[in-house]
Structure formats: C-alpha cells, structure tokens
Length: 264
Image (tube, rainbow, N blue to C red; front, side, top):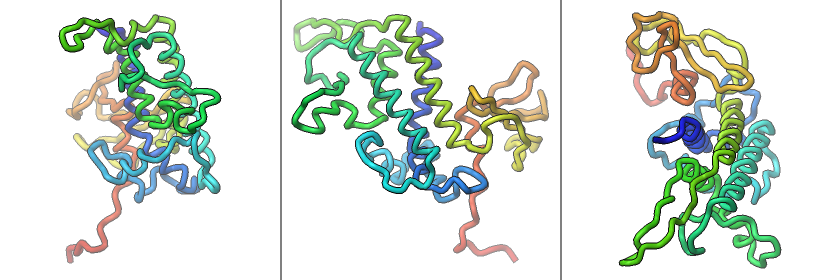
C-alpha cells in the first residue's frame, strides 16, 4: 500500500506537469489582464492532447535559455523557481537511490561539472521539467525497486526504496512548486474568497472560490447537499472542486466564434 504522503506528492507533481504549458505561456503574456489565463492561452489548460501545448512543452528548460523581454516577470520567476527546485530534487533522489547501468533510460543524469559538451554537462535537465517530474514521481512511488530479469539473468533493482526523510523532502518541494504554479495560473484567487460569475454546472447554484497563501484554490457550491455535481463533498456536505479539478470553473467563458451565425 502506498504511503499517503507519496500519493499526494505524486498528484502534485502531475499537476505541475499538466499546468507547465500554461505557466510558460504566462511568461509571454502581460500580467495586466483582469483574468488569467487569457482566452488565447486557454488551449494550454486542456487535459487532452493538444498540439499547441506540446510545442510549449518541447522548449528548452528555462535555466538553459534566456528570456530577453519577458512580459510577465512573476510568471518567469515562478517557472525558474519550479525548474530549479524540481531539478535539484531529482539530483538528490538520484544520488540516494539510483543504481543500475548508465544506459538505463530510467536513470537521472545529474549536472556534470567540467564536461566539454554542453548537453552532457546539464545531464537529464536537457530533457526538461516534464521528465524531471516523472523521475521524481517514480522515486516517490518506489517504482522499479524489485530485482528484474535481463534475458535469463536476474539482476538487482535499478533503484532502492526511497528513505522516509527524502519522501518528506520531495513532498515539501512538490507542495511549494504547486503553490507557485497555482499563483500564476489562478492569479485572481491567491487569497480570500469570492463568488464566481458562472453558476454551478450541475445545479445552477452559487460557486465560491477560496484560497489561502499556502494552498491552491478550491471551488465550493453553496447549494449544499441537494447539489449532485460529480465531485467530492466537504464536512458540511457541500460539493467541492479541489485543485486542479476546479481550474475549468475559474476560466472565463470562451468567446463566441466570429464565424458562427447568431440567432435572429
């Protein structure tokens, strides 16, 4: 049975990966907009396959390239913070539990000081934040920690079980990074609470978004137990959308297609 801390940490790492495209888009989007994300960047927040999001995700890591004129310095600072924290965490976990051969694609290659080739010097960081999050998630969930068959030969496990103190360190880093992502992607809900302009998609009731400086936002339907929305309930029986499931409710409504004929 997985440790509860490991399950929560893995979920946070997945959220970081899923919202990374939106965060990179925010770097080039002026922060003067009254709502974030703007309609033109809405595609980055879709959970399904999206070619625009893939183009963003394929960019070089922020720590390996320059932004000569970022439009949103807060978003750039957040993205650099997340990359630095997750990359350093991957280095730490790899040094503690990684075994096996250098040609194993599951391995994390740390920074190599003095390397002549720039790509070799940065190691696995050259593959970007997504791979770093996947690597850390696998270590947190203790994947690949059993002996394996190579042909007819039983070989030792490529990774050792993650010690508990490193599990909690990974949890701390993942929580801090998720918070930084949430502050940019849901910039209008950093603290306090407010009523959303759109009603509950299930019962039409009032939706309230709440957030604290230390936590991502959540959305609650004020209808109470009578609401049958497909989500969890809080201690008072109200339907609650946790982060990141609440994100679609925080987005402004899509603008109508100018080519679509309007009803007379």
